[in-house]
Length: 353
Ligand SMILES: CC(C)(COP(=O)(O)OP(=O)(O)OC[C@H]1O[C@@H](n2cnc3c(N)ncnc32)[C@H](O)[C@@H]1OP(=O)(O)O)[C@@H](O)C(=O)NCCC(=O)NCCS
Picture 1 (cartoon, rainbow, N blue to C red):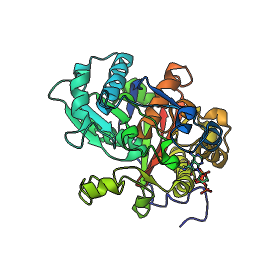
Picture 2 (cartoon, helix red, strand yellow):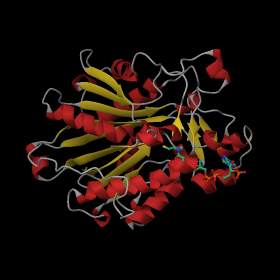
Picture 3 (cartoon, rainbow, N blue to C red):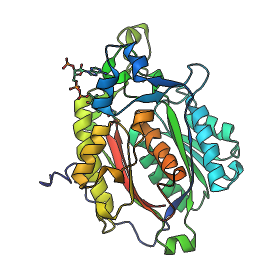
Picture 4 (cartoon, helix red, strand yellow):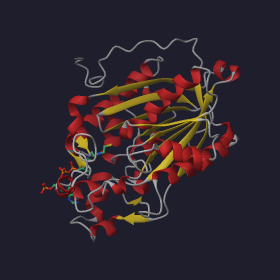
């Protein structure tokens, strides 16, 4: 293991991406967030907590939640996907594949992606599937989309990060219920044109990591093949999110920072070369600790956790969409994405927008 605290956690040797390979580019973004807002004061009426505690320990003020039974993950993702198509200037019919990163699909079967395909009006013969890498999922999705686009068989991919974790949170557990929010973010991806490739634009290289030895740090133990739903699993609360917050916190700070340095060093870059960091919005204190490790001021980080809470795999694409629409991320800017979540699974990528 490396002695350098900044690179610990990413010891797997990094292979060089082949420079001749065509990069992929994000050509449109969108988001879909439920209207209903849950404030810290609302939560303090449900569990023993307070607005002051939640703001100080997490940076969260409000989060959005779906109206249960009326809205599902695919509704939010379809809204994000439609907006992303509009921003990209393409018809949904031009989407060749829909990838949804989610751990809270509308239902266990079929995938969320097939509903998104239908709801955005993508061609019925396009590919559609879900990807499970929790909060790191959007970055995992970028790597998968990169491979599919480079195969030459797909021209436009709709990548969504979407979660409705309000359905998996124990609303009587103050350790977890204050943290999460519902939402979706989306991006349209395609290969760079000759000019864009020449100009160095696009996703530079995607770096993915996982650590299954920490699998129990954040889990929904029930409802799968180990503990299929039963009266007993429900009585035991196995259908809820279970989390060891301290383990996640420590690993997040170390691994987010180290994966950022891995992604940057691959291209001879340092944190100072980055225009804006879009880091997973799990806890403001995590982002602040990552900023310290990267020796960057907080104004280099896009922050919206105060309004959305932790939207898991939707967090990076929602933040990206807001940054783009607010003019904080402009064409040509060098962005750094990083996210970590259950698994643990995490990653980072440098993107020239
Ligand atoms: C969950 C988290 C906010 C807790 O913050 P913390 O500063 O570590 O707080 P602790 O766990 O040390 O808890 C301190 C005390 O606050 C209490 N507490 C926890 N949640 C509380 C809440 N919502 N309101 C009031 N008190 C709360 C705890 O019960 C504990 O009380 P005790 O000392 O009497 O046992 C923090 O660990 C965290 O953000 N972890 C990462 C979580 C995450 O990002 N998960 C998703 C990953 S994608």
